[in-house]
Image 1 (cartoon, rainbow, N blue to C red):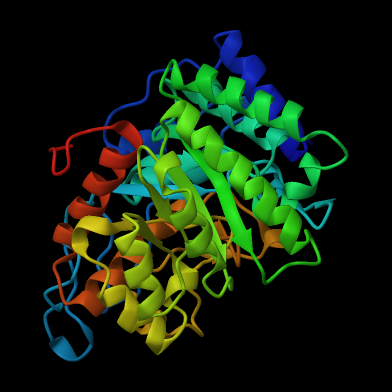
Image 2: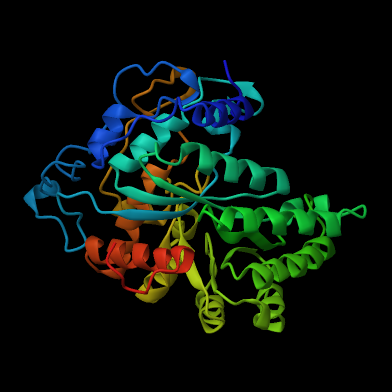
Amino acid sequence: MLTSVGVLDALIVAATQGRVSRALPTDARGAVACSLRAAGAPVRGSLPAVRAPARTAPQVGDGARPMAGGREPASSALPTAVLPLFDIGANLLDPMFGGVYNGKQAHEPDLDRVLGRAAAAGVRDLVVTAGSLVDSRRALALVRALRGSSPVRLSCTVGVHPTRCTEFEDGNAPTTVAQLLELARDGMADGSVVAIGEIGLDFDRLHFCPRDVQQRHFDAQLELAHQTGLPLFLHNRNTSGVFTAAVRARRSLIRAGGVVHSFDGGLAELHELLELGFSIGINGCSLRTDENLRVAAHVPLDRLMLETDAPWCQVRQTHAGAKHLMTKFGEVKKESWNANACVKSRNEPCHCRQVLEVVAAVRGQPAGEVAAAARANARALFYGEPPGARC
């Protein structure tokens, strides 16, 4: 059985040998039925459609059912058509997608199934986020290995996460920065690398990396944005204004804007980030409390982006946002894994649909309008398309 690194290596080898080359249909259900023949693994049956609870939620591809009590769905309800979505951040290199949890193999690698479910739920574009130099190399290799066969358009970031900035230490900083720059330019040449990230500051987890080390190497990576002209994919946790001050002091280095992902701050911080010109990424961690929901409702539609941060940051039943969920996905415990269900407590890109449902509900706007705006915003930032372009 392959580990997460093994499945990535097998994907790359398969792609370079032409074994991951079967053309996939353009429609989501066709993509599900044909899933990727990655790593030479047998495909047993087709990938699942999205399930919906009886009487309360629309099934993907089916007509919307009445709400409980016979009421019609609210104005933010999803239409019968699958809405195209852009998941701006997913950690597809995480061992969980190789079937590994806490260092132990629980089931076979299933990234092909994960991407198929994402396509079935409407995800058309996805940015694979990297958190180290090694991850950046692997993310670029994965994107290239799956080009032409993935049912979702994949691109990636290049950068070092704030909690992993110790890899710059011991005299390695100049070499690491130079390698990141070379990698970014290589990936930009074919459109695979679309942002510098995930970079920023995280003062919640200083046990992983001291504050001064984070700040020093955040500054160095902002230089990468200046040298490449790429936008930023930013991380900001509990920094009490230090993050915004650092960005403001180096604003001239940021040539192409950026997005602060997984935003869970208050209104004052939101306004600061908007004033700095950033977009705001919303995922399940952004929708935990009633205050989070109020803040999400205040993000301007032309600055809003949707994400999962899979396999983390799912909208959980204990979250305030859960009351607005309309779509449910079949799931099983990892020990009972099967190809036709999500793994319980492992977030997947398909759950971007649920983030949309919550955001549309708290804003009181049609889900189609929110989905279209968020995707157009992301395509403008990462692909350089004109804002509002049809896609």
